[in-house]
Structures are given as structure tokens and as C-alpha cells.
Amino acid sequence: MPAKSRFRRQVATLCGVQFVDVLGVTSGITALPAMLRGVSAPATATPILATVYAMAFGGLLVLGARLGDRHGHRRVLLIGCAAFTVVSVIGATAQEIVQLVTARGLQGAAAAISVPAALRLLLDAAPGEDPRRGALAAWSASGAAAGAVGLLVGGVLTDLIGWRAVFWVNVPVGVLLVAGVWAVVPAAAGQPDRRRLDLAGAALLTGALMAVIVGASLSENPHDRFTGGLLAAAGLAAGAGFLVHQRRVRDPLVPRAAFASANLRTGTAVSFVNTATTSSAGVLATLLLQQRFGVSPLGAGFALLPFSLSVIAGSALSKPLGARLSPRRLAATGLAGIGAGNLLLALTYGGIAGIVAGVVLAGAGLGMASVAGTAIGTDVDEALSGTASGVLNTGAQLGTALGVAALLLVAASVDPAWPGTAVAWTVAAAVAAGAAVMLVARAGRRGGVPQRVSQPEPAAGS
Image 1 (cartoon, helix red, strand yellow):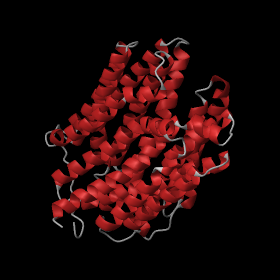
Image 2 (cartoon, helix red, strand yellow; image 1 turned 135 degrees about the vertical axis):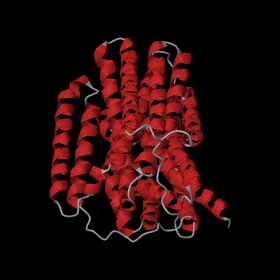
Image 3 (tube, rainbow, N blue to C red; image 1 turned 180 degrees about the vertical axis):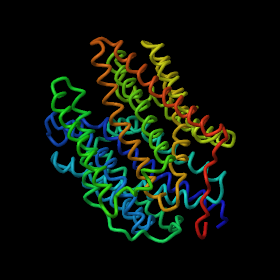
Image 4 (cartoon, one colour; image 1 turned 90 degrees about the vertical axis):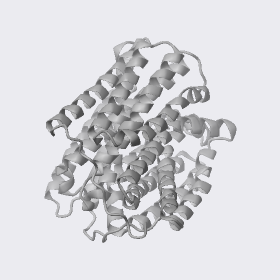
């Protein structure tokens, strides 16, 4: 098989892993009411069922990356894809809420060990700077598009077939991914990292993220804000304990060099702001369409489909722009687009056409900023590449959870009427614009010279 054709197949397969795993975060949300009815569960089970996938996914990503470093990324990816397929059967056949919640949590855990391994293998397979930019664009587009179309996919499957189809569809897809990885993806270059796994650190990090995410979710309800605040505070305390533990343990979960990496810190911050300002905008738009304009959940999903298409377009545009701009300036351009999209949503508040135009602009910015953030965050030493992928994805998942919770809280608190939504969009615009300005300022202090992403040596056999 020609090298170029083999590389394209590797990119398609690995981006498929990213798409399916990220899709799982949002595809189940539309089906939540049907799931609860299907297992005769009370409405009080909604928060845990809605967040358990994201909690396990975000909390275990760094541990997943370290497992790949230690045992081989291809092997861990195959195990993760196979596990995702098996636990989907558990969810599809669930008869009670405990089984359903367990299945969603295990899906998130399987995704957490799959995504960092897939990104590490993607970077290792790229044979040059230009193909690497294209591969990162495809990776970012697949993840952003999956997050954007998840509500639509979940709605279509639930309306046409039933909520169990949200799980069943993963079985044939998972089998295809396992076969694809086995057939076309070679093992990553380099020797395995034989340092001990920091399981205590993993428990602290996972517990911190879970407490913060659940606390933020509960804070959306005025009756649960005190409990949510306590949980969020406990999560922050656990996060502080995690940082102290990382300083003291001999083999930390996050290598000390990762904390010192300016590129990883910047890339993670970009990933966080990307999802915090776009996931929240999409949720607010979905609620506005349904609650003010009377659009059905499925209709709202179709109305926001242009967002997904613009994410893909923005990711594709990042490749030619990336040849002219440094990754930081490209990220700033994308964040400016996200800010402009949110501002347009606020200024045209009250019209469906304005909603569509705003999310299209924000989606294009998200596509560019996602590619740039991933490029910045993965421009690290070879020994950190696996950890970097886990940290970047953790930042993105935390951005989604906290961004949605925070802006829903703003929308509900500013005014009981609908203008609170416009204020929330304005806040999102300000956050994205502020991050863009900071990136440009830092790029200026670096002398204004584009800092190209360093290119790793091609993997053996790629």
C-alpha cells in the first residue's frame, strides 16, 4: 500500500475513534427522558445520568494517557475500543437505573483510555509538517463536529428507533474501529514508560473533576445551589490535594515537566475556552429554540446543524492559514470568531436567523481554534506527548461542563425573562475575546515571529 494512502487510512480510523468517543458525551443527552422512562427511574436520577459519562471521560483521560505510555498506545487503544463496544451492550440491555448509569460511566472510562492513545498514534504517524497540520485539522474537526451533532444524532435515534439505539449503534461501529486499528495503525515509536502508575493521583484528579462537574450541574437548579456549591468546593479542595500530591510523589500522574511546559499550558487553556464558550452557546440556543419558539428537540438539532458544518469548514481553513500564521495567532483568530459569534447571538437575540448565523460564525472559529490549540499543546518533548493528549482533552471536557453550568446560571440569575440568555452570550463573547487578546499579546512578546510546530520523526513503517 502506498505510504500516502496508508497515512490517510490511519487518519480516518483514528479520527473515527475521536468522533465516536466524543459523540457519546452528548448523544445520550437527548435520550435522557426516554432512558429514565424506559427503566422506570425517577426524575431525580437525571443529574447523575446526564453527567456520569463526561465525569468518567474527563476524570480518567490523564490516566488513560499514562496507560498508553506504559503499555503501548496501540494496545491500549484496541482495549479501549473493545471495552466501549462491550459496555454499550450493557447499556442497551439495561433494565434498571443502576445498570444504565454504570454503563454510561464505563463508556466514559473506555473513551478516556482510547482518545489519548489515538491522538498519540496520529501524531506519530504524520510524515511531515504539512500532513501533520492536515491530520490535526481532521482530528479537531471530528471531535468538534461530534460534540456539535451529538444532540441531533441522539434525537434522531430516539425518535425513530428508541433510546436503546443510542447504545446499540456503538456495537457495529466499535467492531469496525477495532478492525480498522488492527489493520492499518502501527504501534507508536519509542520505548514504553515503565514508571509506576500514580493511582492515588488518578483517584484525586478524578474525584476532583467529578465533584466540580456534579456541583456545577446541581447549581443550575436554585433549590440545589447550596449542595452544588459544597460539592464544587470539595472538588476544588481535592484538586488542591492533587497538586500537593504531584509535588511529593516519586512518579506523578502528570510529569513535572508537563506543569513547566508553556505550550501544554497554553494549549490546554485554549481547549478549555473553546468548549466553555461554544458548548454553552449551543445549549442556550437549543433551549431558546425549544422554550421560546416551540421548536421540537429534533427540530432544534436540525436548526443547529449548520454549526457542525461550520466547525468542519473552520478546521479545513486552518490548514492554509496555519502555513501563514503561528499556532498562537491562529488560535487567537479562532477565538475571535467564537467571540464574534456569541456577540452576534446576543445582538440578534429573538430571531431564529440570528441564532443560525451566530452559531455558524462561532463554529468556524471553534474549528480553527481547536486545531491551533491541539497543535500548541502537543508541541512538547516526545516523552510528554502521551500525557499532553490526556491533559488537552481533560481541559476540553472540563470547559464543556463548567462553561455550560456557569452560563446557564448567568442566564437564570440575571433576569427571569429571556434577556438573561443574551447576557450569557455576551459573557461568553467577552471570555473568548479576552483569551484571543492574551494570545496575541504573548505572541507579540515572543518577537512576533511565527513559532512553527515542531515536527516529530515519522513512525517506523509510516
